[in-house]
Amino acid sequence: MYERFTDRARKIMQLANQEAQRLRHEYIGTEHILLGLVLEGSGVAANVLKNLDVSLRQVREEVEKLIIAGPADTADTKGNKLPQTPKAKKVVKYAMAASRELNHNYIGSEHLLLGLLREQDGVAARVLAILGVTLDKTTTEILNLLGPGLSPVSQETTIQDSLRQYERFTDRARKIMQLANQEAQRLRHEYIGTEHILLGLMLEGSGVAANLLKNLHVNLRQVRLEVEKLVIAGPADTKGKLPKTPNAKKVIDYAMAAARELNHNYIGSEHLLLGLLREQDGVAAQVLANLGVTSDKTTTELLNLLGPGSSPVSQETTIQDSLRHRVPRWMVPAIVACFLVALAAGVFLLFRSFGR
Image (cartoon, rainbow, N blue to C red):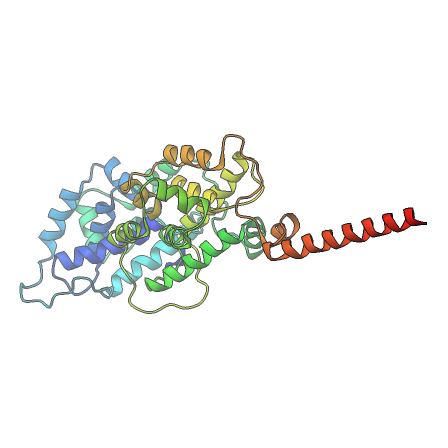
């Protein structure tokens, strides 16, 4: 269900969990999703509510008029993933329906807001009604924010497109994506997000991007700490090849664009890093910003590492390129020996011809 959620929509659900814990509730209701949405503060939905003159303070006040906090002796639920109420589950279903109706194939904060309004029996819908927020006003404002020329182009690439994308990935870039899958599994997530790609990039440790981040005084421990501040581990183990979030797919699109701009005919770790920075809605960009890594600093450092006359030939060559362009070290003595034997044979034949 959550594989089509954007990083921001996932963050809203995590904040909803935290808000439920703050109120000492043992469940996630529609009111907690609304609080998470307003707390997140930077998505389409949060901007819609700002444009309709609705603030976090107002939402909190209205929620706390309608529900009461749990008793002080309620079992501590901090760090636990709380269950959703039936109404909260209906909100997610309505959000998915809203996404389909708008011809989107991702689920973002705007769809969650529409879902909250459609679940009229929920506390969130009552709060929004009290604050003068209606379904019609919200839909109009969303369309204004997204623009009339919104393209329905899929953010979910087909298998064929996916295979074509990875043809130009270096071995190192492929390894980063495999490590991203492993990191998602370690955190018990059901998806690969931008944060997992960043962790994979750091874990790989020897590519252009990893060296660039070392030069900017960023290490794996720091990245792990920042990621774990922003996302929480899932409740159950996950296995197999996990799907990428829309934000993670955009990172790959941005990486391909960065490779074209640098006149490179491969996609390496450096392009993935630039893609992570360009996808500003992703958790990875937020982590990098917290660690002082900017797009400008990264580009400057990248050009320093590659050199001003950087050739588009990959510093992360594929195995095939390696075999074509480089002689393995273990073969050097054998080649030298063959050369000396050939030279000796040539000298012997030359002297023999003079002897005649």
